[in-house]
Image (cartoon, rainbow, N blue to C red; front, side, top):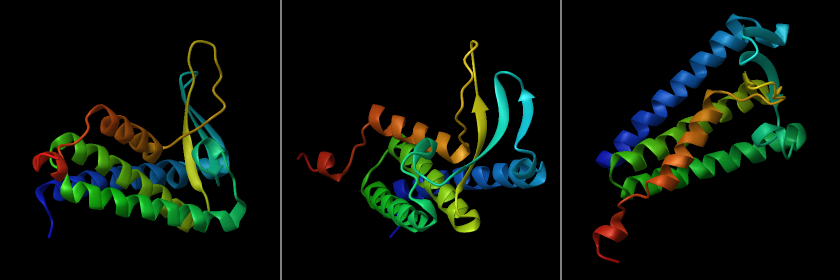
Length: 163
């Protein structure tokens, strides 16, 4: 049974996933970033810089090609756990936070299945500091979702029951 909170969570997850996929199709494939490697957008603040991430965040813990299936399994486990949690939670902050993480995680899972690595391309620099790292819409959604979940703890079933 889909609770109202889980419906909201899944709606946010679907929106994040769709935006992430559209951005990757447009930028990586449509603009040819995979071949070009770099496209100046609003230099020096925002550039499109192709980076294939085979590890976790910013390429950390790169397990090689075989590790992608381990990372896919971990992401799917997190998605299932968050969906189960969202089923019991209520309130918009919990739905938005969980949905953002779920949509972002599934966007990166799609990349690992399609390309064998996550397509990162947003490179933001500021104030004379040249940032060597890139990220994508899914990564940003995961980050924002986690921040929301930390700042706005839900009103889950245990709280409703007075525990």
